[in-house]
Image (tube, rainbow, N blue to C red; front, side, top):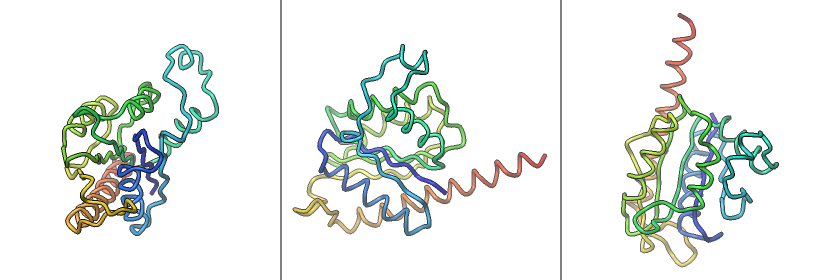
Length: 184
């Protein structure tokens, strides 16, 4: 099982990146192969429909799209920017728009006043791309982290464990259903 975690913070070292890393660590303990992409460092160009129409993607974009298609589980992690998700994450999702992700499991996490507002909006985006979203979400606040940006709040740590357990359970269930349907 493979997971891809997209972190959409405008800072290379951020609460959102730490949250994505904590989720990755928890998934790894569940025998999931995980890659975390810190989008601010990844180098995706601004979305350009002409490039997409002509299939003239640069190497970073082609690699990103391939990783997206190969993952069984995708997690979007965003800071709360103006009660919404970040432009960096939006740009990455725009590059994915032509692909549909039916059968892939999506988890949503955010940092910023423990507000679910960015995740509510991301649910609409995920639904439009065909993802199956787990109901458990993780929302954190700066006070949930120590000075080294490590999560210190025990309830958040427990929530991450429930979150990753749900991601794996949903993925296993949907993969089993898919295999069963192929046998008919």
